[in-house]
Image (cartoon, rainbow, N blue to C red; front, side, top):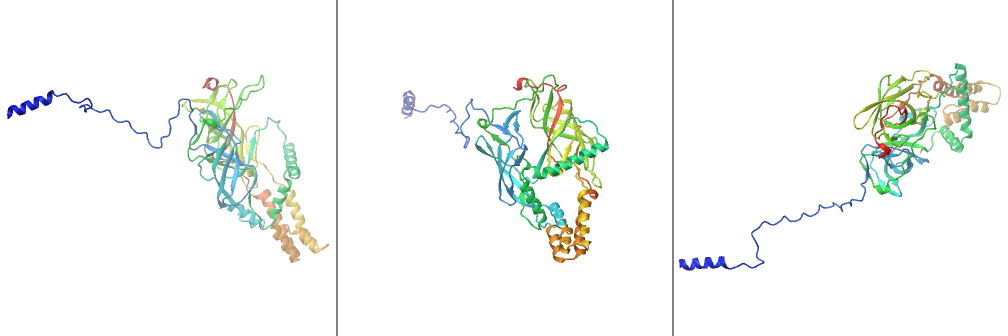
Length: 455
């Protein structure tokens, strides 16, 4: 029996196995399945998309007026170009769309309007922009609602002007005021201005979002812009006249609010460079993302009796993204500000609100108010001419009452309010909000060449 078992074992080992039998070797690992939703791998010749990072600031301006109501769809244009990695990604002037998401009560406007007999419930619109059109294709954008909408004014520093005496200065201001009042009648849009003037006399009128209102907002998520949609046209470098020194214009955005109400000489002022700067030979000298470091050189808060504030600041250093710092001498040559501030800038870069005080208006209103106390002439005509206060409501009450004293009281109220507005109220401060766009002019003496030929 033992001999049989041993023979069977030897025979089993000696018999060859079939060719398709499994060998005792380790199998190679199975290929991994591609990750779900990974999408096709880009070919080596496809350029990657350019990315506008989180927090990129955009300024959008509407070209026409819109109704003041929630849900209103609005369309504006981009005021300034957007760059990524020193390359133009989205040019200025492209279309940006959004809608009014909510109306916020404007308490300051309401209080001032009540004093003039206007009981319109004024509001400020909060607008959320959600789409930007580039090369005919709509790109979704994500941003928080912006509530700082206001018509904007582009400030620019004039050339050097000779010093004038006090009398000559006052004469020049009077001429400028007269010219602006004449332009009210002669400039385009007279019918609309006349309609708004009539609205201010009514106790209630429809609201609207004025044309040329602009909003500033930041991206709440990065924006991928396909390279196929990116314009290949780069802005042409500014070439100074032959023989003139090379001046660089640096466009930057303030990192924090600067106002004459709280600023003191020596306070720091910082601004991000938002557009790359190239020299005459198209060498990159100041990249996007550099930081301008400066300080306030003059600050005076607004005071009583209509004395306006003043503000001036300049920049002394530029900190490059790589960390090194270079000295510069940069003066403010332009800025974007709210039109309601009515700011002006002199040749030295000092910014102050324009003085629009007028002695004629209070004097005229006082003379008209006294007409109601004149017993000569027609009673209805005198009371109608005198009752200029409290808008249309005051005029109707003055005519309907037939009371000289009441009509005169309404007229003197208007005269007193005009005197306060022109002479007694505190002046206005200069306010530059965060992300305000400014233009700095600096010479090319101390700045380094970072990249030859812009490559």
